[in-house]
Amino acid sequence: MDQKAADMDKTDKTEAEWRETLSPEQYKVLREHGTERAFTSPLHLEKRDGLYHCAGCGVPLFASDTKFDSGTGWPSFFQPISAEAVEAHEDRSFFMRRTEIRCATCGGHLGHVFPDGPQPTGQRYCMNGAALDFKEK
Image (cartoon, rainbow, N blue to C red; front, side, top):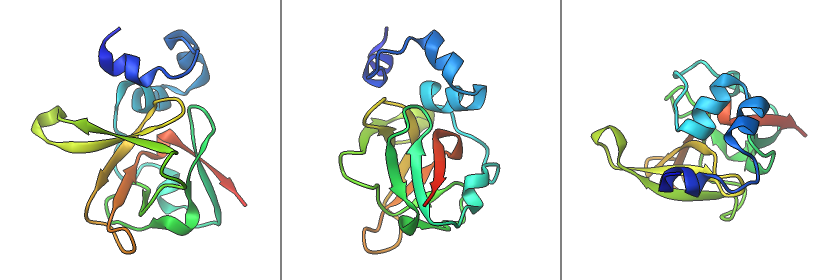
């Protein structure tokens, strides 16, 4: 297993179990670091009060009161529910240098964070909707 896969495998699930648990799109995003097409996730337009959980392990990651319309086509937040909920990793794929965000519990790829978000943090956590499950309060 390569280091990237080892870093992601923070649960006792095998890749076969992940494939059984997740939809093909969720598997591509969470386990293979894929990206859904912009404006395709229903969570992009979600405006109800609630929490966004990791689609891989169910841990709460973002609160609806930190969500904003970034104009990018992906659900965007200015901060996670707690500093411990997510982990940042350097991503040098596609000839870019970005900060990848993963679920701190299961290691699933969620998206990336950029320093062009609104105050109070100035951060834009640009997440794949396929990596999240929304639960209304």
